[in-house]
Amino acid sequence: MAVGTISTRILTDIANAIRYKAGVATLYKPGQMAAAVTALDGTDAGQYQAQPYMTLESGILSEHVFEDIADAIRGQNGLSTQYQPGDMAAAILALEWDVGYKVRALLLADGTLEFNYYDRRRTVYGGTIQQVFEVDVNGYSSASAQSWDSIKLLVKRVYIDSSIAGVGITNCNFWFNAFANCTEVRGFENLSGMTSANQMFTSCGSLETIYATSFSNTGLSGSLMFNSCNRLVGGTDGFVPSTTSGASVCKLGSGGVLTDPNNDNRTWFWAHYYADGEGVLTATSAPDATRELVASNRICAIGKYVGLGFTPWTGTTGPTHRQHLTSMTFAADMATFSYLNLIYLFYTRTNLASVSGLGNLRGVRSMRYTFSSCAFTTIDFRGFDPSHLTDLFYTFSGCSHLTTIYADSTWALPLSGISGSQCFYSCSTSLVGGNGTVWASSKTGYTYFRIDTASTPGYVTAA
Image: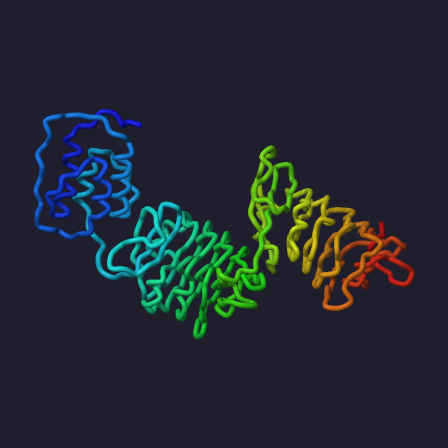
C-alpha cells in the first residue's frame, strides 16, 4: 500500500540524520533505514558525510517503510509519539542514549513490563519498547512515587530478567501495586533475597500466576503483600492468599503463592456469564458466539479461593453484579476434571434460582460456601460422586428457600477425612428430607447431607 507522493528531500533528511548520529558516510536505501535507526547506540564513528538532495524530487513508497522507521525511533526514545515522514529526521537528531548500567522497567508494545539491568536500554523478552523508566533500587514510599505508576493499567504481564538477580535489590515495596490488568509475573526468582515487599501486589485483581523456579523468603517482610489478589493461585496445592497474607506465603510448595513453571499442578476451567443471567462452567475457553456475553474468565480447578473476586459474576455494581446471576450450568465437558474445588463459587448469589449439570462433576473435594445464600428451591446431585468430598463447611448456609435435595439412592459421604461445620446453617423448615426429616437449627452439620431414612435422618431425597 502506498502513502502517496513523498519528496525525496524527506528521505535524504532521514538518511543524513542517521549518518550524523552514527558518524558514517553510509548510503541507505529506504528499506534499510529502520534497521539503521535501530542500530544507533550513541557511538559516533567520526566519519559523518552528508549527502545532497537528489535531482528526482518525488516518488511512491510502501507505507511500511515509514511505519518501520517510526517504530525504530520509538524503540530508541521510548516514547509513543506518532511521526509523520517529515518529522522523522528531527526525531532522529533528537535521540539521546540512555547508557550505563541501570535497573530499567521497559513497557513493551504487547503490554509486557520488563525489568532488566544492562548498560543501555534493550529488551530480552522481545518486542517494541514504548516507554522506559529508571528503577530506584532504594525503593519507593508509595505506589504513586514510582515512575511507571502512570502506565500500570497498560501492563498485562511482568517479565523480570535474570540480569536483575545480581543487582541485590532488597526493597520492592509497591512495585506492582494496582496492576489491575496484569495476569502473570515471570522470572520472580530473580528477586530472591529481597527483604521488603509491602503492598507489592496489592489490588492485582487479575493476577493468576507468579512464576519462579526457586525463591527464598528468608528475612522477607511484606505487609498486605497480596491484598485483593483474589485470583492468584499457587501451583503446588492451589493455595490462594487472603487479604492480609504477608511474606510468609511468598514461597514455592504447599501453602505458597508461587508456581514453578516446570511443576505446575493447576488445571483451569472457564466461566462464561451471559446477558440472560446464566453462567456456564466449562472446559472450553470460547463462549457461545450466538449469545450475548457479559464477562468471562478462567478459574483454577484446584484453587482454594477465600472469598469473592475470582468469578466473572463477582461485581457489586454494573453488568457483572453477582445478583444478576439467575441460573448456572455445569457443562458436560466438566467431567474431564478429576480434581475440583468449588469453594465460594456461588457465594451470596441471592437470585441464583437454578443449578444444573452437577452430575457432570467428578472428583469434587471442597464445597466450602459453594451455595451459601442462593435462591434455588431444589438442587439435583444425581450422577454426582460424593466419595472425594473433604469440606462441606457452610455449603448451603443461608439457603432459606431450599426445600429438596435430590441424589442417587447410592449416595454416601466418605467415612473419614471429611468435615463441614454449619453445612446447613440458617436454612429453614422448608427443607425436608425424603423420609420427612425437617430442618432444625440444632441439626446443621455436614452429616445431614445424606439420604433421609428412619435410621439415618438427613436432608437428602433419593430419586
